[in-house]
Length: 361
Image 1 (cartoon, helix red, strand yellow):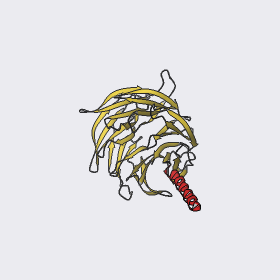
Image 2 (tube, helix red, strand yellow):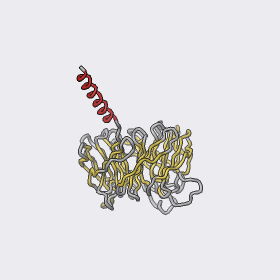
Image 3 (tube, rainbow, N blue to C red):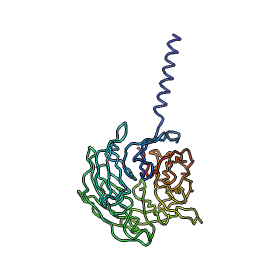
Image 4 (tube, helix red, strand yellow):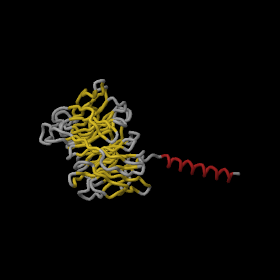
């Protein structure tokens, strides 16, 4: 009897141990890079439950996969190749498999140097072509095949600085399944589009401050506010949805008072609970941390990114960690979030060659 009891206790402890190990969350992610140096393409890594990194492994060889997104219920990875071949870049699709990524197809992006890509749940894929100053539209079918270019929306105009002599579409984002917004650094505008069949049709536009250089945006979970990060003047602009369309509500600096060095914003994200916004400063090499106060943002602090040129960063799905991709110092840095204050604590870092996009599963 004692032997049977001891055996049952041993099995029970083993089951608890296995269950504990299985239930410990990890955070798989994909990493987009520039391939001018040592990088060979798209990598896959794992952030452990304690915020430390596991090793990063090559998942697919390709050229300059500078931005990534998921499509088809995360069964498909989409990457833009930030190149210019006969005046156009490319977009690629990869099937996500247990042992890595399997390339399915590629298509032209419609303009030179695509630097951003997004997809909705129907397989509609939009690419922002920086040098082309336009937005390309393709579709991904159920097997992951990309269509030829279906529509191309060209931007026009210029801004007031030396980097704004022509349009530079820097990102594009779905507002819902049919509506999207493009962020154009070259003309200081948000341009709104609607999908109509296979056509991408302009529906509205919003002018931001002269010389702001809008780059990326983050949508508040309530879908009534957008936070636009402006590269050239290091600010975040709050844009609100009104009965008359989207309108500017407020703008705040991402830099500390008195800072006079060179710095350019890059990326921006909002937490799932809508309480905090983070924006990256390249030059000052920090994340600016803001608390959401209605239609205003209040600066809560800055966190050193422990590297150079934080081009991109991402929050884990549970908002517990932030991982920063420092392009020039070739490293990824993980921080743990304080959910009450929004402030960050450094946890770990790992080497990665020219990292420019972090995409968590």
